[in-house]
Length: 208
Image 1 (tube, one colour):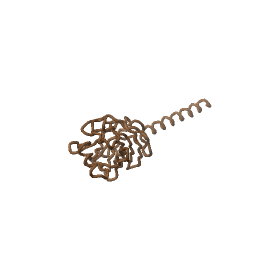
Image 2: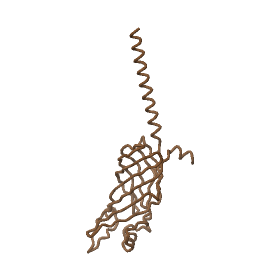
Image 3: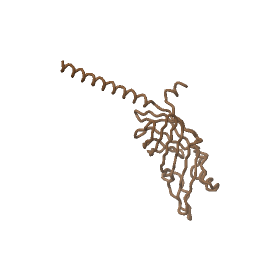
Image 4: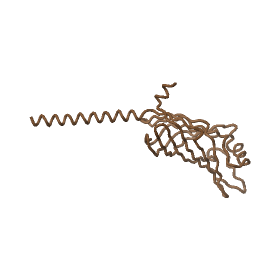
């Protein structure tokens, strides 16, 4: 009788553990749904920093559009973040005309874009995460493979991503504006703070 009771207890414990494991898996699957990230141009900022021997030039660009689709289980991410190249300004009209005409050639290449394809690391939802994002960065009519670090903060319906990376513009074929009397770096620092809303991809598909 005692042996039967012990077997019954062990069986019950095993069944409870199996149910717990199943519930955990189902919960994880539910929270790992594909997610759509929409960027908010009004609250997203794109800043650049270019150092020279006398002082540091700082300026901004404006986001044109942005929408991403993320698959948490595989880490795949698609979509694009597009910046208006012609919106770049540094506070000096003379310097900005030179930047657009001779360096960016923004009338010919109006878009600066990032097309991500892979997230390295886990994005907590909700919570804060440090990840790396791989993809193609398009500027001046040419694509460049990059991996950038990102600090991501997720809530139930909003998200923020802070990204810092370097663009070696001279190496990528753009003109360095240095002169005999003024020398500037051949790379520029980019700081992106992306802000937007979150929707489960299933909900987005249902509305389409």
